[in-house]
Length: 130
Image 1 (cartoon, rainbow, N blue to C red):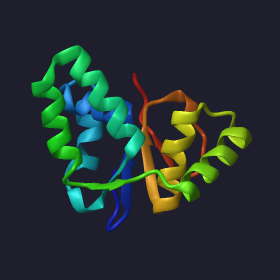
Image 2 (image 1 turned 45 degrees about the vertical axis):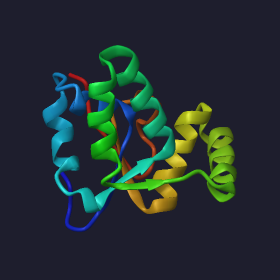
Image 3 (image 1 turned 60 degrees about the vertical axis):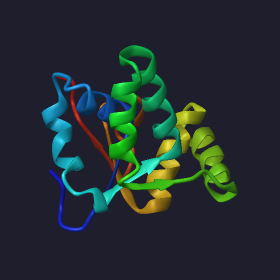
Image 4 (image 1 turned 135 degrees about the vertical axis):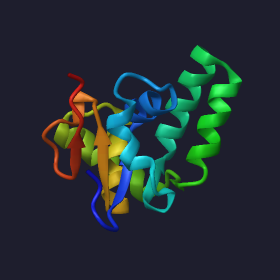
């Protein structure tokens, strides 16, 4: 459960569950309650928008965009790219996952995910899929 003034970065799996009213949407819901505590990776913006646009059409993709852009979107810059490269090598993460994790760490945010690639990493809240 979210704590006090902690920042959160919900990864793509969480956004898709929440925006699509998936079976685990309620597990992610508490992390979306306070937009001022929500950080969005530019990679998450790309992944979720593309997935929703492809699977559900522009209406669903635009609803996501409206919600995501009310939070603080973190752009990719050279510092983040280099941190992600190190994380990718150290943790054996694919580029997109490394960028998402680097964004969370650089922003001082807790990564909220159900993606098994992140399980066991520091500053990660892992939500089981049941």
